[in-house]
Image (cartoon, rainbow, N blue to C red; front, side):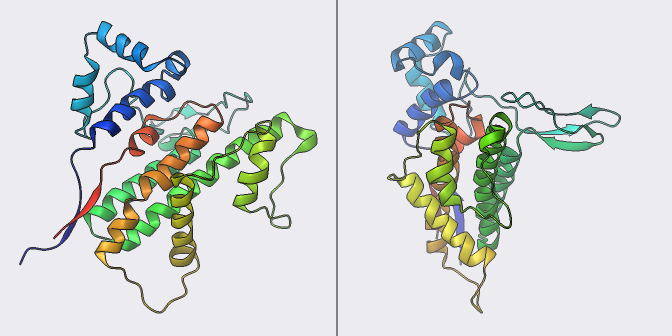
Length: 271
């Protein structure tokens, strides 16, 4: 009898590969140059550099292949050597973090460090058919989204000390209120689109996190593999897609791993 295993497809649809390449160019490491450029100019740039766009689309359908030219492969978590000191300077406020002396590790952006942990847990949960690991994955993923909002709130408060956005134990502000009220205040009226699949999937994952991982209420703990796979396939929209949308809203360069995982291959049950 063959053991049932959750797996990831090796390839993504052609349309997804097409969008992945263009979005790496427009919103990733080279966003300052390509953000508002038409598709034709991005394709022409690749052609001048000796790469045919359609051939790159076919190559990148195999999800393990990186996007040539546009994908930054350097992660956010760095190892600090013994004797070295590292601090991080915020490129918006110019504020410098407290230095960390090695040996050690540092995440250049707390939210992206949490996202990387979340992604590793997702992959491990697939490999081990594990619902508990998946719950840990979405818990870290949602924490990453919350950390992203917190990072921008701290920047706003630093630059606007007279009209600070306050969230304390005695003045608790819900995440939804931060989305609905704080973001428009920080961005002169701009709002997150809550009428799309990304927000719908985020709410589903947040509900799972709240009921199963944070406020565990039932006496049993289990899920069918069919349902688990269905929930796993919400990750690319509800976690990575949500982070992608927030970066675009705040007009910030999007880390390549967030763009990439927004096009994560289909997860399926091999039975």
